[in-house]
Image (cartoon, rainbow, N blue to C red; front, top):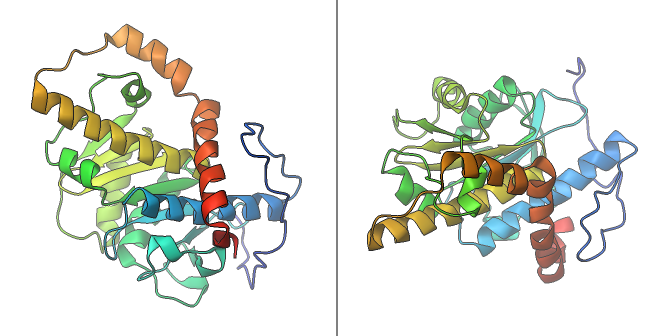
Length: 270
């Protein structure tokens, strides 16, 4: 953890060439500025993708990225700006006390409450994503985790927790700490009567897991509405998760979506 306070971080420093379309080779970063810039590009792209998938809902939803240099600070979207309009220049840098260190717009207090607690409790979770997606929040009312009914769902096998103490909008830090405690060492947590939250070592993984998890919620809701789904046996689910849910595969799964949004809306890099 850095003992200094960042001042006027230049978000344009460390710009690397955009990856080639279809490339699944990670771009090596040789400096902190390059790592920060690359992940801020993914963070802004993540918001545009959330809008594309219909995850924007009024003032709700946030994705964060822990700064690679000032590790008790994180980058987050400002309150009141639609996901479809977010650019790198709009992102806020917030410290562990909830103060805005860089950025002009207000901070969503629920974003700070939830994400600050997760980043503090989970040094491995450099990114966390939460939104009020329709299938995720619908599934959350059932008070259970996703079943391994499809290959995609096996990615979440034994990687889910439930936070079942909904007490209103998470404006206080105690609520955020309780969510982080419920998450434990899992990659995802279902916030009962609220929605989904996913984490990752990088923005790519956290965003991809959210998108995939919401689709799995949709799949299970449809399957259960039609009948009783057939579960994949536990031992097969573990095997499939090792194949489809490794860190590299999760990262790679985001790359085609990044290519898509870069082609459609390159202004997120502004």
